[in-house]
Image (cartoon, rainbow, N blue to C red):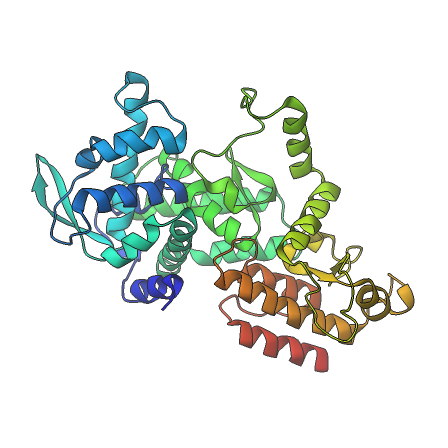
Length: 399
């Protein structure tokens, strides 16, 4: 069984409705809970317990362990723990990660250890997978957050926001409404009072979903100008808008990266480049696939669906013959062959499915469903399997 299926099966057995929980459940996520920090602290727990389910550990014990001290500075390019300037930052890492793992029932509370709360690992096989890489930690966080918000009756607000984006009508008002709903929800159903804490937790929860769904996320309390990416989630990410530019990045490169993220044309070009990197040959292997696949085709045309123009799920690599005689008959880019468009969607679904199975993060099944819904003007639910998606696509083109 894949790690993703193992996590989903584990979470299915747990009721994560925070409306039913006692005080303290407000810390199901927190400011330091990012894929890279989650992965690292999970590894520290495994080292501290020697992967033994019966060994009790604590947050201070992890923070002061030699393994944590030795590796945190190296992995995150931070000052060595113990300095006064870093003590208020590092002491939150193990504690906040531990709370998330506890609520997900990967670990559980077990008495006291040196006057601190003690814990034991109850699902070491899942914790070990999380520790293997940030992509596994990300997979865990996405399914954990999704399950929790669904159980708690809040996910409908995320879905509404996503639909606004996919329909091309999303604006900052919708973002502010979502954020307000979240703040009220947390204040109304946890022991957190006031807007400060919910506003800090919101991006850590929302941006994981924004990354998976390829929709604008939250940056500095505002809606991002671009769909969120998995790389934006990491704790130690480079902020190219920061005046304190990393020494390893030239000023020219810094400016190029800022422009690339804000300029629609450059975002589209960057997406096309990524498609070429992911697929060395045509994604459709038919009689016209002979030769170098030099063309990146918009399945749903850019002029009709500008909101889909830079979406990887709407781009497919083709040969010139496929592009200029099949996708666009007689090389007329204003014309789309519906039969070949259907084939492009079906083959793209296979490309996406295979990429996800490999553990890559370029594509999203939910984002592909959004592309299909927008392009075909239908309303598929976002929990469909790839086989169900393909069946729905075929049905749409028969009508």
